[in-house]
Amino acid sequence: GYTEATRPVWTPSAPSANMIDNLTNKAAFTIATASSLTVQGSALISEATKGAVTGKLVSATKFGAARTLYNTDVFNLAYRVQLTSN
Image (cartoon, rainbow, N blue to C red; front, side, top):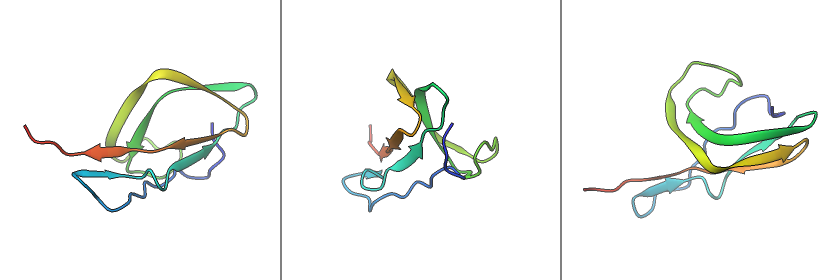
């Protein structure tokens, strides 16, 4: 798990070149675990309540390789959305 009381809010920078992201204001999760925690992906969800199953799933991704985290590690997460045309 993580120690934050709510899910971090996605706070993007101004859009540029058909992209918007939160690379300058990454979501930080302080890990709380007795041993280790394996993170295999992430999601951008509209509901800030920790553990909620409501809200909208905006984006989800599975990492190319799992991340192993330990107690008190801080996991910083950023999302980038890019628009392209066919």
